[in-house]
Amino acid sequence: MTTEVYSHTDPEQKLIGVILMRPELILSAPIEARWFIRNHRVIEAMLSLTGKGINIDIFTVSKQLGNKGLNTLIEYQKNSFANPKNYQLYVDEVRSNFEARIVRTAVESALSSIDNGDKPTEVLNDLISASMKSTTPDSKNFNYTTKEAMIDFIDELTEIYDGDDKHIGLNTGLDRIDRILGGIHPSDMIIVGARPGVGKTAFALSILKNLAKSGKKVGFFSTEMAVKQVMGRLTSLESGIHAVKFRTGALVEEDFPRLTLATNNIAKYNFRICDKPAITIGELVMQSRAWMADGGIDFIAVDYLTRLHPDKSRNNQTLDVGDIVTGLKNLARTLNVPVMVLAQLNRGSENRTDKTPVMSDLRDSGVIEQEADQIMMLYRPDEGEPEIIIEKNRHGAVGSIRCNFNNETMEWKDKDE
Picture 1 (cartoon, rainbow, N blue to C red):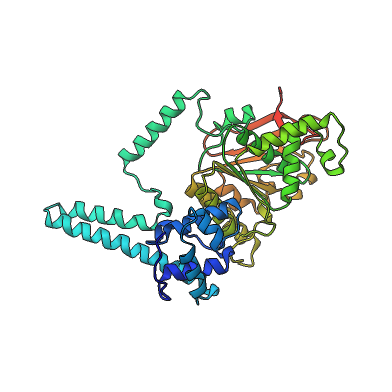
Picture 2: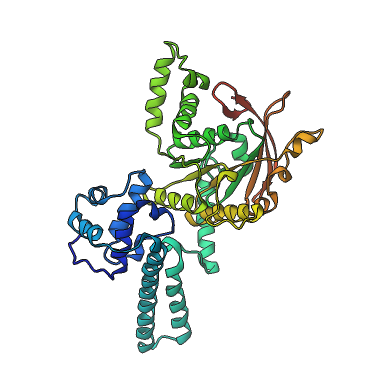
């Protein structure tokens, strides 16, 4: 990063100055490094630090940049008179300038093509296509010709056919679910519903552990449990030691070798955890994007739906839940990763003779049913075997799967394990 003269009117410098003053603001609105001409590496460093959970300041950013740019960052922070309350305005200004540059370049290219004798209709199509790139997050393409779409489809089909498991989704570690769903697919939103105490968090952690163990990069938003509790659950899953022992300290001598091995294994996992209790959908999206910027992410689980908050409440529970669910589905599409969301059920099943949960037991079920790609219900009857009930599968079959639940480690497993 080269040293440059500070300008009070430069929108990039104003925005960076505000972030240095109020680092938490970087999670309050979408921001992309490609919007910046001179400071894109600074924003990349800030997003990477956020993804790692490291506080942003001039020293951590400079270190992330390879111990460069410290003097410039000091100037940005010292001379910034920008108001943090106007953060969104500064973000909009930087993005607007970026979009203007894209359009200007596209227009100049179109004029050059016209001068070279290209057909006006082709030039116009290229102009529109190039200009639309400015509004697509992270340069991701959402527009295809049928030829481009078919190439993508054939590539995917080839990957499926050549693969050992004959599916392209992520392996949950529960083979029977994987066979029905074809694994958990990128861009899908999966709702997992259950009554309190049935094991929703245990189900998510079982899948997160299995994915992380296979080398996948996973992220977990834990709004109910603190990070120490999450690590206790993971350590129980990995070691086979009764989870209660980690709360009571009642470990015996033979537990320690297993505990040591388990903690060493977990330390190698690419497992991100955000345990902010009152998180908004905007903050969740930005933290997910920060994880993606800092090395990527393959799977995200959210525990749980009704503890998330809309960015701006509409004073209507159904509308607020709708905004949150739509935001989660858009996150799955934009990052192209599966997003699993845990959800509470209402008391409807308790008043029925058959206690088996159904989709309509989901709180504010209408919009959830509409947006979800898959909906699974967890059921542990007082008598009989635990079940995972696939109530909705946009891409295939539904059905009920008998399975095992280990009460000591709170792990969901295939029935034959």
